[in-house]
Amino acid sequence: MKKTNIHKLTFAAILVALAVTGSFVSFPIGASKCAPVQHLVNIIGAVFLGPAWSVGIAFAASLLRNLLGLGSLLAFPGSMVGAFIAGMLYKYIKKLPAAYIGELFGTSVLGGLLAYPVARFLVGSPAAAVTIYIMPFFVSCAGGTVLAIVIVTALKKAKVFDGFLGIQGSAEKAKA
Image 1 (cartoon, one colour):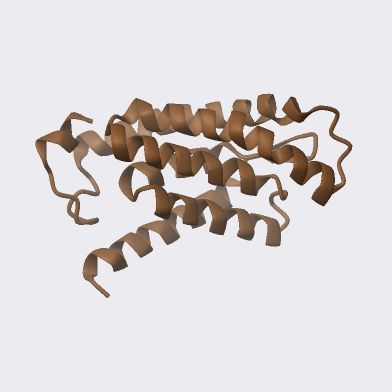
Image 2 (cartoon, rainbow, N blue to C red):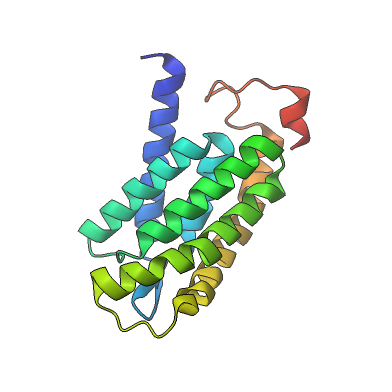
């Protein structure tokens, strides 16, 4: 295994741990437990590691949160879709606002819509409407996105992880 891959795996494990411990700062809305730190982690993973890593981090964190009783099954569609959309938009557009918008839209709208069948059929929650989870997911995601804007912008400007993760300091990436 290359040194870069070990660094990425280590960074991903730290992000999973941050998401799980950040779950202690959550609030229940209906059948969901909204955890803003998960959205911060999704954006950090999307920007610094890419969409595949970010989805893996979201899955691992959701699984651990559920096993530890810190989350609900609704963590899977919300966090994984948001992580994927944020990662894909950042990968192709290469601008930080694309990752932020991707996380907000992916988690709140797409994840909120995908949470309905999970809540209805797997959790047994009597969800009244398909759109019922969009607003709670948006509130949770907005908090995490604001944190990400501050933290990720500072990390990118300081080029904190560029050498650690093997990212080349190209002019194109510096503009993001």
